[in-house]
Length: 110
View (cartoon, rainbow, N blue to C red):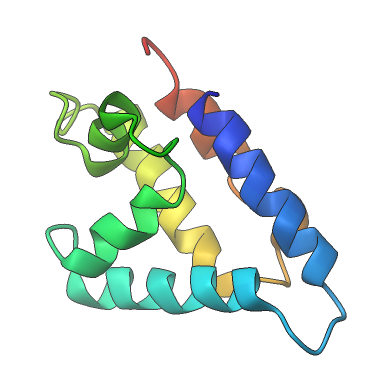
């Protein structure tokens, strides 16, 4: 699966939780997103958040999401990573648009 497909899977889970009393996916995304924003790009929380959008065991995708694959100075990739992170704390309010533009950019060249 691509990063985009992984983001779509997370979005689908979040959509199913909208209006529910229990929202484990939304709550996890929101909490980790806030911690990642607060603690910064080199924090464990940043890695935990970005790991949610990489296929398990796919180190290439994770490196792209963490900007450890040589794309740390790529403005489009950095913008996409920022938007993916910024979407997190907004759930479920912005769940329909979660990760849309970011995931397409992050898949380039993988």
